[in-house]
Length: 417
View 1 (cartoon, rainbow, N blue to C red):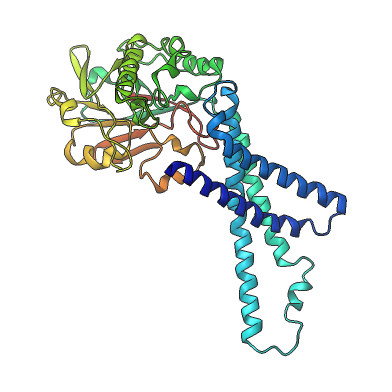
View 2: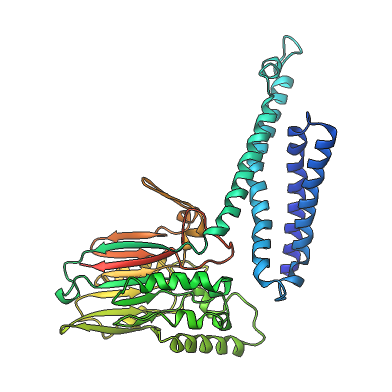
């Protein structure tokens, strides 16, 4: 009932937003030909009402499989339109504030003549029209960018990084690790494109492959079509994996608690069936030329209260105390600050994912930004605290928004030295 009420509140908010934005549309089309103005206004309301109706009936169509590969795009487009209007509204509100201030000024301060806005009217384009155009331009730009991002979701970017550690055993100098995270197989619609990413991983001939969680969005059967694809992954020292927050099925309503338990057990079998060693609060020792390093894997542990923590790092760590070099696989990077750097200072390298870099941002020389940085202190790439290092993978897959803008899907190749 609460969810139903919340949905209708959101729909009413969207309708009010549509009405408010339409006032700006009328301003920028006021000098157009009547026929042109009629077409623009009609298109605006056809799209707006269409989006509202689609959201209203979404619970009925989202449960069906008849257009599984399209509904995620449809939903993303509707949300993109909504976000574009929100951005545009910032400019429209600025103009409304300006007009209120001018009105107050004219009422409170005596004027020498009635031509109060003469300067504004002689600028050639009234400021309200300018701000209206600016709002529409920025909102439209955001929407266009989001649509463009649909084509980036399988553009796997190989990032190579060399990490030096004083205590790394000499036998592991030059040891190559492939790190991937956040596959989210339930979002995939193109098996050939995913297979291209797998081949890109295999081409690097890494010594070990480490996957740091979120194999699925919610359910184990999301992997049915992709098990054979990911089963191709292999490395001399093996493929190791951990669970992420989505793997536990916390974000769907199950018929019974037992169904949720069974789903998790089925997902464990998926890992095993692909030849991946799932590390649930445990560690494994890799040996080379008589020397060892430890791979420690924990279930999801979050430093944020809105995500459930399942793991036990103390349990996972036990037995690896005397190993000279340790790598921790922990899905959520917030775990690093809250526990790893405080209580387990001899864990040399932590590998995480989870953030996806929000699948939206800017990464160019001299500038690295995403809205997710205001939520996670460590959200993409390499971070250092004393002798400890954290690497946050930007994610192999995607969820929610079926695309990426500026933050491309990542395959990380780490060479130890």
